[in-house]
Length: 434
Image (tube, rainbow, N blue to C red; front, top):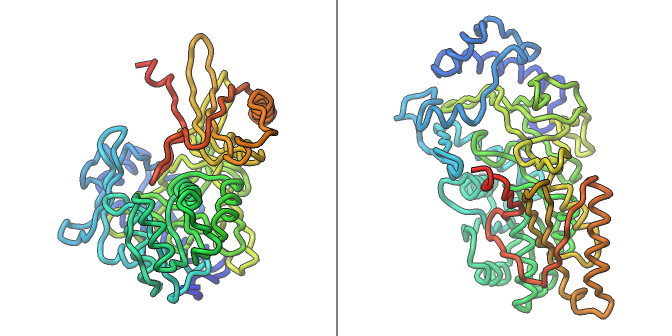
């Protein structure tokens, strides 16, 4: 552990601390961010109406469009001369969302990331090869400074240049790798092509993976191919970046650092707060953020929160694996389909490769088309029957998804690889509607 006094708090003590910080944060945001004062006035409430956690449901939500509409510095509670860092999203759907940090915010973020590393068993004696991109994206610097705060050695190699990644991994005897799960699968594939045996030539023991959804089946493939333990890290730039939650060594859900974040689950359609244990959209309130406090921020991530104490001894609530995002959900012929469901089916079938692409189109009716690579050894074996194998995949997917998907088998290496976030879905209906 990095901060055992905080990490081992009992849930009752966590709740008490959250309530104190929550009431203070509501007042702080109201007094220092004009947007929140306006939101409260429209809702007909004031900070005096918020006495504790039980009153959270009274407050209006914050959504990503709020950040875009107040670009670049609108949701800011301090003067610019107190801002020491800013990050921003890519802005692929409009203006980027900018997030700002004071010196104290940076301290908090670095400590959160150090906790994440320690929870996965990383120590100051480890060598962390950081393959996340550096720059406006929060991933690279978040994983970098968290490792340094823990006292580990950092190789800031960033993303890309896969041959050099593998060379450094071998020569420097890196013990921890930090990257997207899709890039970890690509590294394993590239290592084999370059003549490396990951379990013999590399010294990697731990993988810290985030920034994109992945399944338990993908985890197993990463662990088996690289000979490591793979840990899920959750975060988003609006909430500092990575470091909001992490799996401990039990790998039984992601502990939310609840001294810094209050989480709720809501019905994504009605906004109603759901009872504990029900799957819903995750909503976060930041409890100490100075530069850019966020109250009831809607993440669009869909998950169940488990409030039972973990076997590791921590009582910080756990996110059970995120099913997907409400805006990633595909509606095919009136049926809700998540890309993670398709990955779950594919990765459970022997002979299926690591790379796939989901294509959604519309002629008269919606159509679901899945391109998927075949494992090289299976592709070259006498048992490989393309027609029968494609039919098997189609049957398995229809049983899970309840909609028909057309499967196109691809030769090994045919689909594009990504050195960052993988592109798994092409929804051609969006272009057709423009």
